[in-house]
Length: 443
Ligand code: FES
Ligand SMILES: [Fe+2]
Image (cartoon, rainbow, N blue to C red; front, side, top):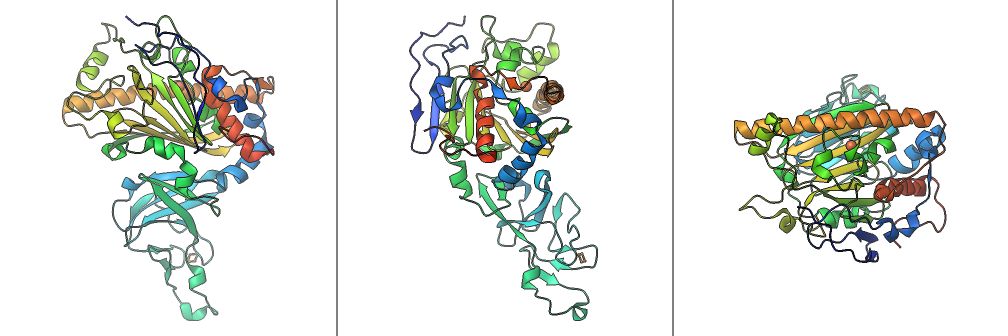
């Protein structure tokens, strides 16, 4: 039987020196989402009023987003495990900046990033999406580059005029890695990647990302604005309605459909929030396949399996209120990376703007390698469930974008637990149209 926790006053925002600010609900007893004291009170700089639809619909605003956000900030392109050995490379597109980037591990094991362009006449150097090379040869006239980007071979060199080979190295891109996440920055970074991640990196420190050795991929080209796509991961309010057939009973109780979080932290432009699950959830008797899948795979709502180190021992930042019915953490790295942490699997989404009303969504779910056929079955069932949930989200991302483009509404109304939507919009505004004195995050 779920109990409503004892009410107490909203704790004041906890503000730390690293620009982190937290709001949380009470965690005494069994947590329920009926505890609805406003989280928003902890973040007065975000306000509570309606927000403008213009940033989702304006082509001019989109042009500024490309220049002032995607061309200037750290962007996650890959995981370290994708390039295990010297010579391994991947090519990643940053569409909002018309940039194609080669990430390659050198002989010294350092991962470097280069623009994917030949210095001769500008041909795209690497057409493959990934592979292993000892060098990169341009298919047009045969110029060849080392793993460190240096120009190694010029065909018919004696026919060129005073060629400065050093100047013809591949254009390098700033590249840094934190906990296996490889980021690039197309400009001169204002701060190191670690400084940029700030409190978000503190929160995620220790999570065993490397356990997810069996990834599963989804990819969509959405007819949606990139922020509308991100917003689908910034609140749990919609789980009871849009996902009523796929998720509702796992996350809501019959008494409460408000979708409140357990707690939320803002870390400058980044954030994370803790999600409650209904630990009493049982599939209906008729759902025999779901019953089987849950028998052979970990219940997403559960904590550590007996005998295992609790996930919060490895990663103390997870479930900071130590709520009994915590099930996952949703975390966002500005501008376009969403990471979902559970005790066993973790999920990564990147949202790449293609146009004001189009977005490429990359989604990777990192599972531990199944040890038995039964575990494999359970994993496949779980992934199909996520696919069905994603399909529901896609419809809404596209429908919202199309409806907003009609211009029929100039504002949107956000409830307390949609604070992530408000925070993203606030942060984007700060980059695109900075106003002196406007807070970036907690102050
Ligand atoms: S454009 Fe690459 S060798 Fe000519
Ligand atoms: Fe959703």
